[in-house]
Image (cartoon, rainbow, N blue to C red):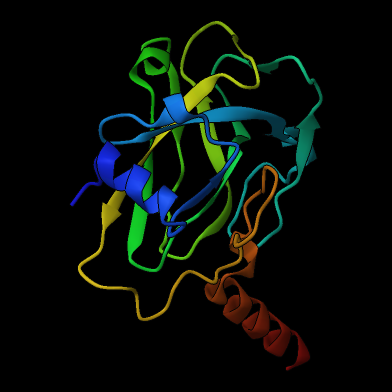
Length: 192
């Protein structure tokens, strides 16, 4: 069940849900508007082997500007929300881009469900599908966090590799168990 504005306000008041830097106007009828922070990263495409793979660390370069983040045409950028959230063990969420921004050709998402027990700022994946660069100002509403009540508290709350992130965080796919198993197999083959 998606949480209403009343339930969101109640959870905040009871301190079961925590959102640092939240504006009272951010609470919408069935979501919470989150704003853009000034921290952003773009892929160092000139530093790659010509292909990205899930077993290797991906290099990014910081987009440095306190006043503006410019996303080039047909480019992918990582950014973060200004708000730091802490979800209880029986609430999960997902991120949707704002329709007004999507109509400019900017697709915004968080690659997965925000798990129960997650604590941190949300890293956002931004893709400019337009033929022109898009300028974004920190502090501007960028996405919506939609929360839903789970049927019961999670047996295991989120304790993953992105727990506690406080800035834009690049992919850590190379830390996944599948990557570790392939690295181990390569090392064994080299020894034999």
